[in-house]
Amino acid sequence: MSRFLVFIAALWLASAAVAQDLGGRARFEAGSLTDARWGGGAQLSLTISQGVPWRAFTLTDPARLVLDFREVDWTGADAEVLDRSEAVAALRMGGFRSGWSRMVVDLAEPMVIGQAGMSVEEGSGRATLSLRLDPATPEEMAAVSGAPRDPRWDLPAPSVTAPPRRAEGDPLRIVLDPGHGGIDPGAEGGGHNEASLMLTFARDLRDELRRAGYDVALTRDADVFVSLEGRVALAHEARADLFLSLHADAIEEGIAHGATVYMLDENASDAASAALAERHDRDDILAGLDLSGADDRVADVLMDLARLDNGPRSLSLAQHVVAGIEGAGGAIHKRPLRRAGFSVLKSADIPSVLIEVGFLSTERDLDHLLDADWRAGMAAAIRDGIGAWALEDAALARLRRQ
Image (cartoon, helix red, strand yellow):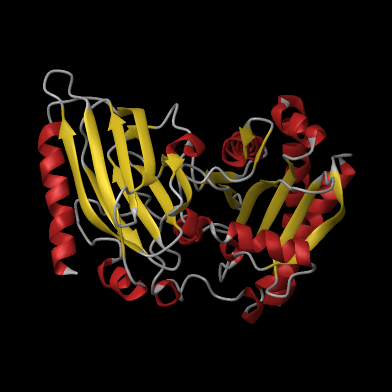
């Protein structure tokens, strides 16, 4: 492992020296991922407009290659065109954090990084990253895998100073969580992706709630990836009174339309809800996060709501949001209230629901999400549901204190 970390540091230092004299983001220009000619494995070639600091490492469970850059504009990169290797199961790229870009390669078999380097042309500054993956046993891959612990790549400490706890009579603090983002686009349909549509809707809903007097924050306000753990932590930092996670689904078979509201329950209300929760909870893996030891690291954050009194409050919130949408004549699913085990809803002290605003696989729902007037109506309906819940919850809180 120590030799691996030295290798990563060398990559950083070599490319950083080149990048210091160049400004702006690098642009993707060309690339390919092919089977190695001899001995198995795969070869990656990636050409970008200029050299930038970068690093490469592998992860297991499942086997992945991760490439980080500061930073690359992936416009024009097509995963299906790039990936021509039978040793690769899937490939994706996108923004990871502000100032970071990431490529994640799902490997069909265990492999290790055999060789990697970036060359930079004199004059033009164009850079080419060449990387070779060699076949390995699962044990050999595990021995050299893991996200490097390098302070130059560490995320900065959260800059948000937690506000004082809300006094009685102050406006509710609501955290809106537009799902997915960055390297994880979420569901796709009609040339649009869930991450972009939900960010637009979250901004509309934020503005509507602020006009109603609520204190509102977003877990992300740009096309960047935020981990499930990070979304919950942001809600705690803001000392949120409510947490609403916003999504849009897509199905491969059949037709479905309308909004669905989910609350946390490890025993999903049906097979479709269980499958949906499993897809959403794979976001961190898709984005190339190292989840080894995650159960210990987030145990204090991701606690089961069923052990506390937030289950009934979240259920009431979900019911009022459904009633608000129905009362406004909004598009609602035939079974609008469901239960599923979403990790993003496992906040110990914040009533939380997940709203699937519609289905990108259904033309009518997609048209709705692209329509500013429709989004305004849906935002107003959710606002009304929150308002009704807040009145009921405040009355119950007074009874509990008595």
